[in-house]
Every structure is written in C-alpha cells, then in structure tokens.
Image 1 (cartoon, protein in one colour):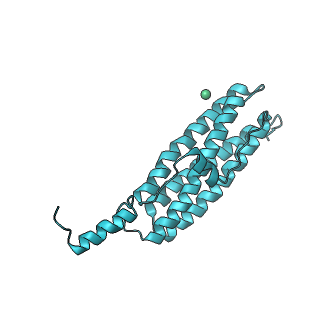
Image 2 (tube, helix red, strand yellow):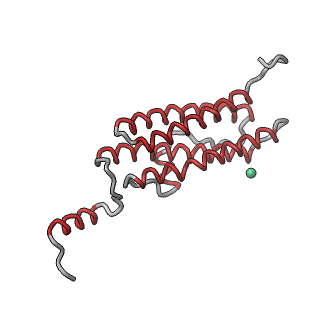
Image 3 (tube, protein in one colour):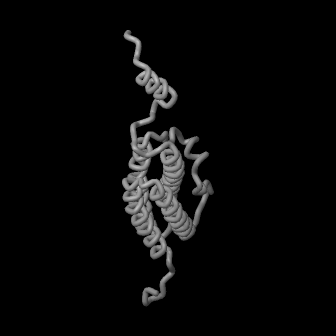
Length: 182
Ligand SMILES: [Fe+2]
C-alpha cells in the first residue's frame, strides 16, 4: 500500500479516533450539546412509550375500550418519534442510545411498575408526563436553535404539537364533567 500523504494520514488518524463522525458543518460543541439533549429526549420518549403501552395492556373498568384505544394511539405516535430522533443525532455524527439499560440510565420520565393503577390515575400520570415532555422539548429546541440546527428544531416543533395534543386528550378524557360538559 502506498504511504498516505501527511494531510490524508492526519484525517485517517482523526477518523480512527471518532469512527462515527459523519461530516457536518456544525462544530464539535454543537454536536455534543445537541446529541446530549436529543438522547435525553429519546430516552424519555421510549420510557413514556412503554408506560403508555403498559397502561394500554393493564387498563380496566367501564371505560376500558375507550381508554385502551386512546393509549394505543398515543403509544404508536410516541414510537414513531424514536427513529427520527435517533437518526437526527446520527446525521450530526453523534452517538445515540444502544440498549434498554442505556435508556434507563438516561430517562427523566419515571417508570410505574405498580401492580394496579386506577384508570383515572393512569390518565393523570400520562398527562403529567406528556406535559413534562413538552417542557423538555422546548429546552431541546433552545439548544438546537443556539447552534442553528434548523432541521432538528423544525421536527421538535411538530413533536411539541403532538405532545400537546396527547396532553389535551388525556386531560379531557380524565375530567369529571357535569351534565353540561363543564
Ligand atoms: Fe394492543
């Protein structure tokens, strides 16, 4: 093999140090900050996905069909976010989550492993979790904006809208209305 010219050799050595460094015009600090922020979101979305799915499985009571179907619809929406988030991180050359253990170490949404949860408590807990996720998405939006990562901010805007919709549905579904609906 011919010996590489010095600049090529330097690049090759640099690549060996960071074999997953996809070319990007964002600097190292931006990639680090955005990756950390979006990986935390990814862990939260996986945690919330599994909790929503668990509540779908463990739902009970007179509103079973309605709540069971709502949880399933919301879980599907959360799961659809995961691939897009992870691939945003990879497109910037960052590393993303690798395992259930990695999710558990990174997530900020709390698990609920209780043997029984009242249906109304399930709705209230998911509503709070979705509200917390909206706040985290806004923070992540700030981080991405700071580094002019418009591709990530534009996706986050859609996810905020979807998360607010889930929160709205959980709020209205869990509300004890009087006969006038108020
Ligand atoms: Fe199901």
